[in-house]
Length: 298
Ligand code: HEC
Ligand code: HEC
Image 1 (cartoon, helix red, strand yellow):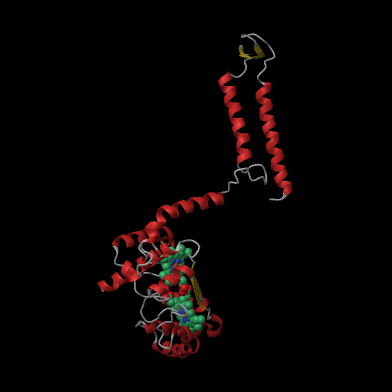
Image 2 (image 1 turned 135 degrees about the vertical axis):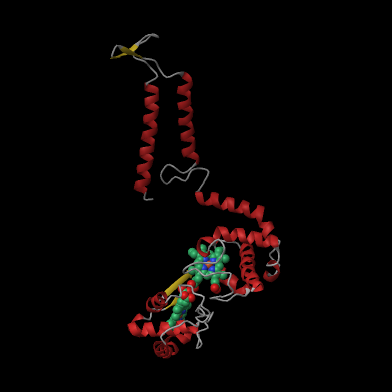
């Protein structure tokens, strides 16, 4: 805050305070004396007594004014003045986090040295992971972690960036960015349709075979570098497997063409500064367990 606005607030606050004190005290004294004195106002024959505030009421006001002044000395309120307690929202929050770490840190820490694969068998650890998932991840990946349009399903054993404990942990800690460039301009309209048909044919879909054949050549030229010669994807780029009929952005011809024409850029935010290492360790085990069980059921 600039020093002008700081001063502005200090002056306004001070004037207000003085004004309130003045109103309070100037109404203490009555102009007329005696218990039956009136203000002289008459409304339809009803007169107004000229009595001061009852003492208890007056002192309540005095107490709140003193409290207000004390507050302005202790806490920030007077412009840039920080208050003698040096309180801020940030340090209150930090203190609360610290207390929570002390209280709950030990609970998380007991799992610190357990390998993820082992944790993924531990019902109590998974329960904690699930709760953290609900609080931190479900808004994007869904409560059941099955994802939605643009947000990957974390239970299907299909990974953009790899499904080992280390790879999952890296996804959570560092975040991920999947960049599918736009191909509308280099390919042209017909090229987009052809290469999309070829992509759809990779997962066994019925498409115009002449068009897919024409697209195949373009695929080798423009797409294989990231998605692989067979279209099976590459975790180094987060380029999805295009042969398994699992779609991040929809598998209808229209949506695939849109992906190819305009590109995509999914962002998984980094959680390095949001969650402690111990918490991420438990979350990793939870995510890991989701596709472990899917695989076991299949
Ligand atoms: C630079 C690497 C790169 C190249 C080259 C590339 N892609 Fe992609 N592609 C990606 C990435 C990364 C994604 C995932 C985007 C995301 O996560 O948001 C993707 C996503 C897709 C998807 C969506 C898949 C789904 O599950 O919804 C399709 C379809 C696709 N690419 C087709 C193509 C075609 C066709 C070409 C060539 C014309 C191509 N890609 C070239 C990196 C690439
Ligand atoms: C703001 C939305 C958002 C939040 C919050 C979010 N994610 Fe993600 N996450 C994504 C997106 C989008 C991707 C895919 C990135 C891409 O398209 O390349 C992703 C990718 C991932 C991947 C990699 C998946 C793969 O197939 O390799 C993992 C693992 C993951 N998220 C776990 C988590 C966990 C655990 C949390 C909670 C701590 C979380 N995410 C919170 C949006 C989010």
